[in-house]
Image (cartoon, rainbow, N blue to C red; front, side, top):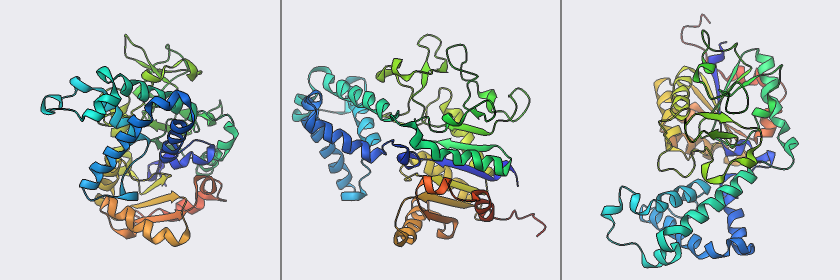
Length: 359
């Protein structure tokens, strides 16, 4: 076996049992705050207007109820687009804004910006739960790496620090930074397998959508990590969150996306933990890889009833337009999966044999 044979993709569900809300749970928390916290009162009508418009737009395309992709990312993405106002490329084509919306957004759409910043500030809190020990099940990655004795490649869509907490002198999680602070800027060469890169780590971690502990120098634009996230202003958090496109040309986003594409093409077993298949960029890369090699398998790990397994298998296959037989569903949460006895043996048994293997 090669370390290239297996890659992991982590979605919001992977961290849910660590006390970090999923995208949909964040929406529920926001709606509770709008109804109970006086600091959020002035945004309640604005929120209701925007949510109704999102559902209305989905309904025009034939999507209703649970079919509508509405979560924290949908909301903040919409706020980001609306915040552009006259700076948006489509502004010249808009003859007039909805009068009710203009009234709620206030002059220069200042309420849009204030509401968005309030949400992002809360997001930072949600990403840093009081009891970090709830995420101890991530130790399963450490046990798996030690059993396989090969570096693991983990691609995460999450902003939390659950995987980084595994890092120690004896167990290195490579994030692209040589340390904390502005002296240790992000360096793509740290992910190189030889030559200019450091010795291979136990885990290569690619955070595709950013991280709550990243900060960018306003002058040099270079990226670095900080130990204390409290000093990072919500407006300047380095997250691909609420953007019109999740494809950024600046480092490290484009590099990570390319690395994910290459790794998915090389792998024989793709393991998606807690991913809801709601990101078109990620889905396209997965689909491209699975179409290229029909022997390749996609293991989907998510909490669902055993009775839903077949339906989930069909739904994932349809979302990616691949054969149903390429999808394997484990109806359990990330915690149960990562705490599985001899997980290494189970995963090795799922890897399809290479076509040029002798037996």
